[in-house]
Length: 395
Ligand code: RFL
Ligand code: PHB
Image (tube, rainbow, N blue to C red; front, side):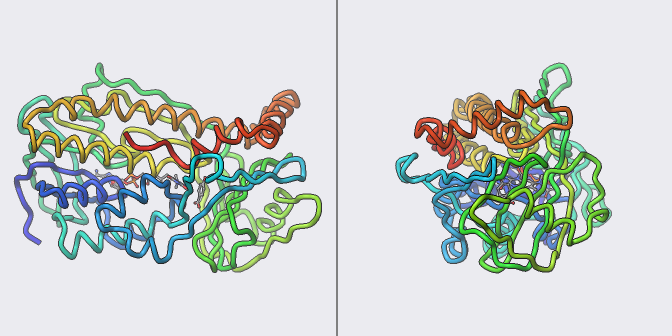
């Protein structure tokens, strides 16, 4: 592929945020280029999120990227909560006016968007490591990057940083103007993929005296499970048998329920943090997705927040193209931050209600159990959880 030196919207990062933004802009006739540091197979295989909100699915459908999702995605109408050896199902459609979620892995969303981009989409360069973004406060900001060993530049009207938490685009915002908010959690998730049919039809979020556990899935034959573990845990230090035994103990309920075991094909330990950057725009540089905010995965919000950012952004660019005014681009940061803080609150609520902190007192444990009892007893409390889980409509 020839390397362009000029574009309207330069996109740093080809994860879900960058790829979906490029697809939305390309469909609207806007000129854009995506620069991705890694190679294609690395980006396509990176194990991450599994849950898509209705708004994310609607956006993928609207830009022609949901053909396989509609065939292979699993529609989920609820989740199960477990605590004190009992369980309670939260039914989404009846509590949210018909909304639901889809189980369809982030890896598959990324593969679908890359395939579309390669077939007829905006230019997407792999192995293109962005080293700096300059000129945010000028009319012609520039992306500096290295591609196949050669240093290059891409001059843009606007630059969107979709380069994740460790990216470089955020550095384009002057230090004195950037405000960050952060919480690091005193536990991590030990995630496994296993070649075994899921032992449940819907996801199970379990509070237990030994810590949190989550049963998710990738397909009718592949299970995805997580265990709360201490920070710094070495994933190689657990045998397969220890992992399955611990999962079984944490999911245990009265009345009997069997966890099916199978070969573990992948394992990784993931630290958890909440993080927000304000503002999400400085001059002609805008941030989207994990570049601007991180949530702990307990609420399944990260990928969906990345999607809602770029949906808002694509509309703002369309408004700019149609009218020549920057009002919607100017409002981008405030519009997104409202949703971001709502999702931060929910993700933090789910995390702190379901996990057991290393120094947690019996009093705090009783508060967690009282909260879970409340969700089971009150349709209002259950609706609050369900509305947040399925995602609020994108403005
Ligand atoms: P990404 O996916 O990190 O993509 C950023 C891309 O930018 C590239 N990059 C650069 N490219 C060029 N030059 C540079 N200097 C660059 N620096 C970085 C990177 O290579 C990469 O390709 O961010 P994006 O697009 O904002 O997407 C965010 C999501 O990936 C993330 O929020 C979710 O995975 C979070 N998450 C979940 N979200 C959900 O909505 N539902 C879930 O069920 C869910 N489960 C999860 C999760 C995240 C997890 N982990 C691993 C933290 C489960 C887990 C275990
Ligand atoms: C996943 O399937 O990876 C998953 C599902 C729900 C979450 C987090 C991760 O809350």
